[in-house]
Image (tube, rainbow, N blue to C red; front, side):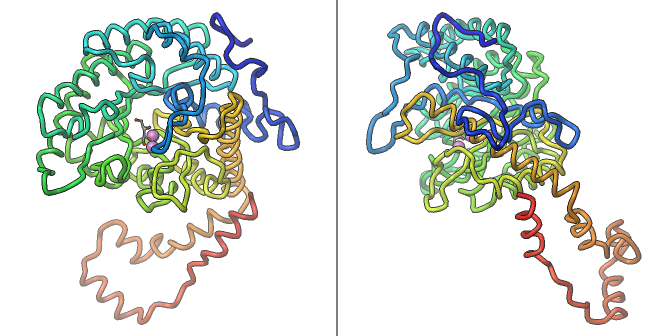
Amino acid sequence: MVLLGEKEFFKGIGEIAYEGRDSDNPMAFKFYNPEQKVAGKTMREHFKFAMAYWHTLCGTGTDPFGPGTKQFPWSTSSDPIKAAMDKADAAFEFATKMGFDYYCFHDFDLVDEAETLSESEKRIHKIVDYLKQKQKDSGIKLLWGTANCFSNPRYMNGAASNPDFNVVAHSGAQVKIAIDATIALNGENYVFWGGREGYMSLLNTNMKLEQENIGRFLNMAKDYARGQGFKGTFFIEPKPMEPTKHQYDFDAATSINSLREYGLQEDFKLNIEVNHATLAQHTFQHELQVAANAGMLGSIDANRGDYQNGWDTDQFPNNVLETAEAMLVFLKADGLQGGGINFDAKTRRNSTDLEDIFLAHIGGADTFARGLLVAEAIIQRSNYGSLLENRYASFNSGKGLDFVRGNLSLNDLYDHAKLSGEPKQISGKQELYENILNQYI
Ligand code: XLS
Ligand code: NI
Ligand code: NI
C-alpha cells in the first residue's frame, strides 16, 4: 500500500515492481529485484538505496545559462513550513513508490533557510517533527544527514576552513543543528562533503592553518554527536575540485590520510561518489578499493560523469561495464560499512516530466543490480578468482612468504636475486581479464 499525504504528487504512477529483463514496461525494474539473494544477501540489503532530497525534490534544472525548467508541484506554497511539508509528502510518496528504504538530505533541502540562525533552527525542528511521523508511517529510514555549508554566500571563502573565525563558528552552529536533526530522525550516518573547503589561490591562503582548523572542527562535531548518543558513522565525501580549484579532500587516499592525521580514523569512513572519482582522474572502482583497503568503505553516492566534460554532471548511472567492475570490488570488500547507495544524480535540464525522475532512478537501480549480478557470476562461475590469486602465488611460499611476513632484509633480497637469476617474463593478461568481465555482462 502506498501511504500518501493529503495529496498525490506523482499521479498515475504506482509502486515500481520488478518485472524482469524481458518486460517492456518502462515503469518496472528489469534487474533490481529487492528480495533476490545475491552472494548471501538480498539486493535490498546490499544496496540500501536512498533518495537524495536535493536533486530529487529541489533540483529544478538551473544551470549557469538559465533558470530552472521544472515546475515541481510541491514547491508552490509561500509559507516555508507548508512548502517543506508538501516537499516531505512528495519525498515519501516518491521513495515509497520506488520501494526505497532510505533517504538523505542537507538541512536546507528540508526547509528554506531563514533570515536568522534561530529562525532557521525553529524551522528545522518543525520539519523534523513532521519527518518523524512520515518515517513512522512509511518505514522509510534516514541513511544520512548533512549540513549545506557551501551555498549561502557567507561560505564563499569556505566553512570550517574559512579565514574568518565568525564564519567557522556559524558553520559549527549549522552542523550542530544538522547533527541534532539527524539524531532526532534516527539517522544511521552523518556526512561531511567539504563544499568549499579548499582554495582558489594559494597567494591569499594559509593552507596549513585551514587544514588544521578542519581537523579541529571535525573532532568537535564528532565529540558533540557522540556526547548526544549518536552511534552511527561519519563519512567524508572526497572531491578533487568544484566549487574550489583545490579541494582539501581531493580523493580517497588524501582523505584517509587527513582522517588519520586528525585522529578520526575510528569514527569516520568514506562516502565515495562516482563522478568525484572520475574528476580526480581515478575510476570509481579505484576509489572503492582504496577505501576498502583502509577498512573505510562506508557509503556510495551513485551517479556518473561525462568523459567529455570536466565537471560534476551528476548523471544517473547507466554504465553496466564500469558498475560491474565496481561491484566486484564491492562484493570482495563485503559491501559497505554502515552506509548505502544514494542517487546523488539529477535528471537532465530538459527532462521535465515528473515521470522522468522515476525513469532515472529505475535505470540507476537496475544498473547497480545488473552490475552486482555480473560480479557475483564472475566470482562464482569464472576462473577470475584463481587467475588473480595465482598472479601473486610467489608470495605464498618460500622466500616470497618470508618477505610478506617481514622476515627478510634488503641483503636477503640481494642473495635471492643472485641465486635465482633473471626473472622469467610473466604476462599480466589484462585482455583475458577484460574478456571475462565482458563475457558475464
Ligand atoms: C557535491 C556533492 C554533494 C554531497 C552532499 O558535489 O556530491 O551533493 O553529496 O553534500
Ligand atoms: Ni555527493
Ligand atoms: Ni557530487
